[in-house]
Length: 331
Ligand SMILES: [Cu+2]
Image (cartoon, rainbow, N blue to C red):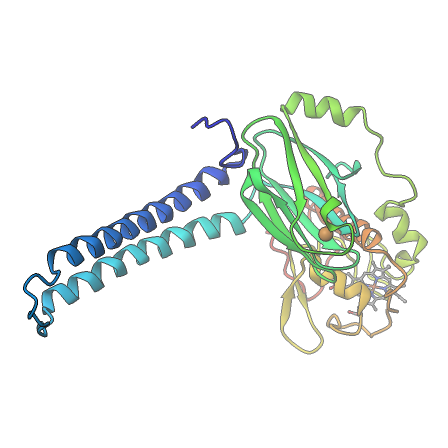
């Protein structure tokens, strides 16, 4: 469909054709019924126009069969739209298992990115082709929204919690990124681009970039600088529980019950340590609210997650036995 002007945004992700298909289906149904109704109005108005001067209207009995037909058919079409829409929605909301995690911080008025290998970028994100990519996103200040029209996906970026976005790019190229939530004076300038590279080119690009970024300490450094290690040695239970292998596992709480350790739980544990106390421990941990930027918090969370990965490779014993915690990865 070449019209000389962009009727449709470029299509660049595995999700795009699915979203377009359901969009066109909706459009087709709407166009068909609009036409049917418009034509019927004119046809019936003409057919039943008053010919003899003294003709008056008479009431028609409603036909039951007709009533049922024009209720059941639209209902069926709506159900198709609902079922199909739900399927595409779930696909869009659930990152595939093998997705690689990238981190995004929105800030008035820029996007900051961090690669899994630690590379950092502002307003431009390089990603490899054909690899599902999961973005873990938060905001330093107000609500932003991450929107790449070519990927047909959009997700709000909220202060104080993490939201997720995923895509798998289907062709190399540069795709525009927009902030889709009015966020202040320079909202319209808060954009950027996603650069999709062939996997080999991506490797070459990565190799040429320095790890880490100016002025931002790594999670491991922050863990020492903020004295987390005085209570949480990675390999032992001192005053605080060992953090090795906790990500994705269940945390047993002093109040009873348990909770899956995810990014939001780690965030809360650091900013509001007294909110959920780990079973068997005293509420000794000081709050770090106001002492860490969103980006620093993210570095700490990435670091704690990486401890989990290490413990996966050496086995649960090497990471220290954890009382009262059932790791999903430990067999
Ligand atoms: Cu914004």
